[in-house]
Length: 463
Image (cartoon, rainbow, N blue to C red; front, side):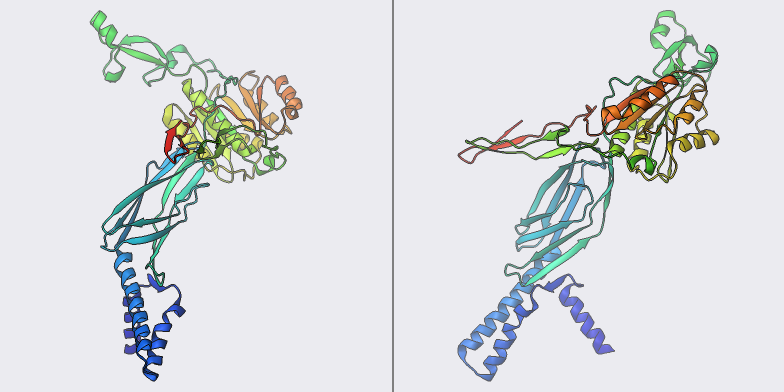
């Protein structure tokens, strides 16, 4: 038992806990074999070859033992979140704390971001710190991880290698992009008889309803200082809380709604893209990428729901979200940039995996009274063209034309004609969006710099 423990301790010490290993164990056999042969047939050159091979093997092992444990690799992410179309960038630093050079370090990255990898082969002189940047365009919304990574180096002859794992991971969230819905007019709803006095509140909104005398408890930030300077009296602003009813966005995530929605060929689709060009006199190096967050019915539906929320919030509206993809995604109505981020957080990993059709989601929401709001408007985003959800939409309107609308995801522009006519009969507006048809982004990606190589080998940076 004691002998086994000793053997185990020696093995752990020699391999540094399993990090050092022989790349080709058979390559270490010639040295001992030559030594045995030299002892059996004592020729001078056999001893010379045996000792030389053994010295080289020990030197290779010593090299790896000195360099490997003294290498430090650090990665840092510039931003923990991004939107589709943004550039993900990571900064790396390799520090060699040994006096011997690290001739090569192979880095294998297990990050899950589509189209991105930190895999690289780097080197560093003794005592050197070397940095670089890896980047990629985010092309798919979702929650991803960066890391873990595995690094491996070896001696100049490749007899021994040192390998270690960095198990730490970091999460990055890629939000859906926001597009301009220029021709979409939001349903305003109504307040259902609420008196004007009930609309003038202390809660700050983009709409100022008037001024009144200051009373104890009013916030100092609501004081209208120009009026104070002009009249000498403390006057505070009154805010119009509800210029229109709240807007609920119901996103259809029922799996059955997307089974028949087949995306068309995207050969002619346009997106946010870059391309490589070249001439006979020089070469141009430009990263090639294509961003098409609308190339499937689900992605297009998510982009439209997010963009509609951004448009309504920019108008000062109260906006809420109602969806179900196996997990209830409910965001109560609210205002401002924080509300937009709440909605985007629910949409970032939304899937077409719901068990309830859109009509049932709307009815369950109303039955649980989570969406009860006098005069609230409803906008549905769905690829379901069978109209099975029309009854729930009409029930929401309750005879108030203009209180609801539908944004339809279609494979061809003409496939929603019958449903649009039915929507018109109940006084609901409708808009169609074709899968594969690009929408203008609110924040388009910046064009990337181009590196042009002149005939003399000079690299010229340009737009």
